[in-house]
Amino acid sequence: MSLVMSPTELITIIILLLLPIMYEHSHTFRYYLKFVIYYGLIMLTSVLVIPIMIWKPRNVENLILASFLCRHISDILGLQWELRGGDYLKRKEPCVIVANHQSSIDILGMFELWPVMRRCTVVAKKELLYAGPFGIAAWLCGLVFIDRLNSEASRLAINNSIKHLDEKKVLLHSCVCYCFLSFIYMH
Image 1 (cartoon, rainbow, N blue to C red):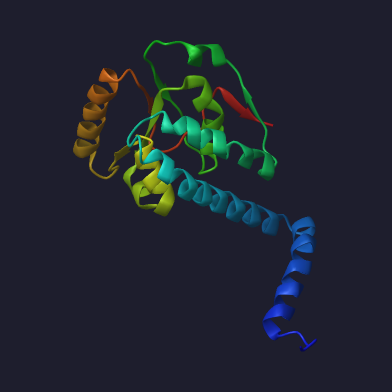
Image 2 (cartoon, rainbow, N blue to C red; image 1 turned 120 degrees about the vertical axis):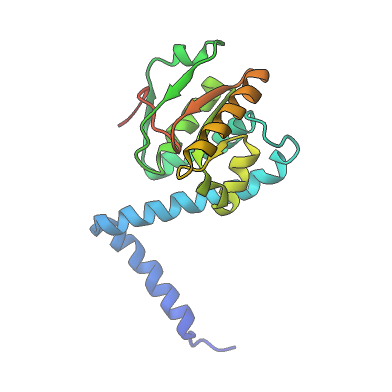
């Protein structure tokens, strides 16, 4: 049994010792580390929920499960959300919510909304469908994917989805990608 460390073990120890120092002293490092954690947790959660969602494919209620499992990510990243006007979202009447997409973190705000809205879906850019396990989980959740470069195909996809969703009494959350609603404010 050798007490000498291999180069890999030594490098691993140095990196593990440097991580907290870099996190505390570099805003840039902290920013990118949080994004890596965010994307990693979203992908991990997607892998975990796919076997469950496959039993109810294209069902928007799968979003409630996804939001329940992903809501903790905001806490890990130090984000807090406040829902204002939530009573409007609880109503059982059809509506279209138009929101301005700012970044991929906006979906964390949506995770706070799905348990309130229940039966709501999102219009998302087609490229997200190919985002690994996240794309598969999003498809299983009934997201409507559109090709932003082909307006006719996008219009057709949305119109077909509206007919399908109307039959199932599902709300359509309209935006180009995942959204940041005006009902949510980040502290």
